[in-house]
Image (tube, rainbow, N blue to C red; front, side, top):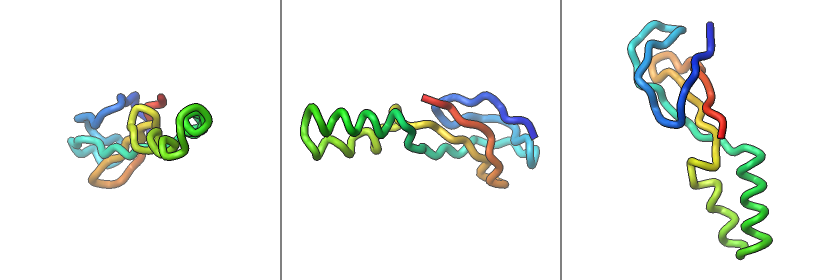
Length: 78
């Protein structure tokens, strides 16, 4: 199965695993960048701000999956 190039938002495509026409399901995952941004916010602003990068999608990778068969389709790295 080939991994396809995906973007930051859900996409319309044909799943390479089940061949269904789908709109990809996106799950966001924290990265090293997310943790670094949280640490910087903690150091330079205040400790409650440390949560912000974990709730902002632009600080996380977007992992795409097929909603029909749950096959991994690709990751958009931030």
